[in-house]
Amino acid sequence: MNTVLAQDPSSVLGGLYISFWIPTVVLTAALAIKLPTIIRLWRDPLLRAVGGLLVIACCVFVFAAPATIAWVNRVTGVPNIAAPLVYSLITAFCGSCLLLIIAWRNGLSDRSAETRRVMRLVVFAYSGVIVALWVLFALADASVERVRDLDTYYANTPFMREETLLYLLAHCTAVLITSRLIWNWVRTDGLDAWLRWGLVCLGVGYALNLIFDAAKLTAVAARWTGHDLDWLSTDLAPPVAALSAILIAVGFILPHAGQYLHDRWRVRLAHHELRPLYLLMRSVNGYGLPFVLRASPELRLIRRETFIRDVLLPLARHIDEDLSRRSYDAALELGCEPGRAKAIAAAVAIQDAAERRTRAPEEGSDGGTGTAELLRDIGDVSRALRHRDEIQAVRARTAARRGNVPVHD
Image (cartoon, rainbow, N blue to C red; front, side):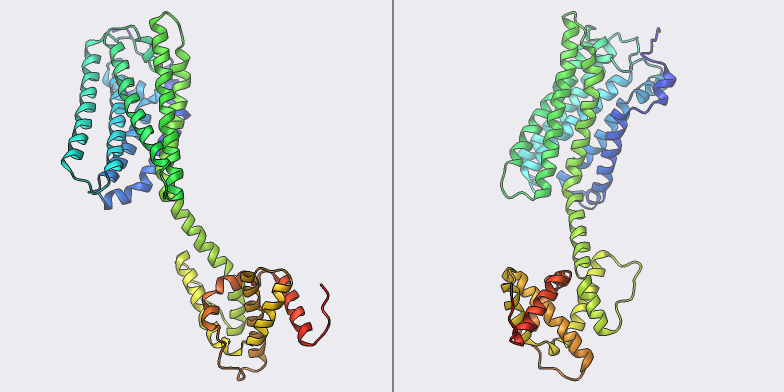
């Protein structure tokens, strides 16, 4: 059997095509992130559909890579046997998309007969397409191996022509339905921000698949009319498909990873913002928290909050409530908003209490009426302590007014 390679096999096997391997890595990362949840909640049809779609999408790009195509053809000894394999994977991907949409549309708890019937219909329809792809390939004469341009090279070959059209139409149908439903979902109210951005990525990713289908179909149709637009199929379609896969993977990753990173960032930021008040309380207490190597960010935040409150509670009896009120008025006079003025006044009062406790540990009042509120607002107070110039300005203005010294703005 005469076999003509579109390019040298060694260069095909040695080259890792970015258009295929980058989306494979991104899709694999998405699957790795989702896998623990998929395993834990295996009975949920939505999660099963997501898992199946990501696995099949990874397989599509692995087996569609020119290096893998050449390897499959060589190992099996059948020229172009990789074609129905790749087409079958693409068709299975289409079916997974539709199953995912059905699961989303009907909800995780829907086990109605109608839902099961529709899902079975999708499985049977796309399984039938896969069987037809293999039958058409067996009937076709495709003895000349084409690693990159098989769709256009065999555009006028009986049965191969029908095979190409079959997988492209099945793909286009699934993408149209999926894309339309996703964009309808994006426009609904009440969506979490991370979920909305994830859906936008999914919508754009599926919409790009339509460009892939259009490029392939245009190149094939051009061959029917005696024209050569093969570059649409060989040069445009693969990077478009790669970008589409990356966006789809990001769409699945973003709601989960984005919320996770956002929560982690908020915890670390809260821990960092408490540092000024923590250092002040450590100076009052004489020692701070011992370092714990394996402590999570959440645990570090809880330990810092607890330490601050534990030291602040007995310190509250040294707080001068009159100083706090005068500091609040001074902060307002300096142009601070009420909320910020309140935090600055509390910071001034705590600094004063720390100094008073150092000078006379046994002296003190019964505790201010705002102790509970002060313990609750430690984040605002700590942020206020970062602005030393404002603290000094308020303290100076408060001291000047107490001593009846004229204050000039």
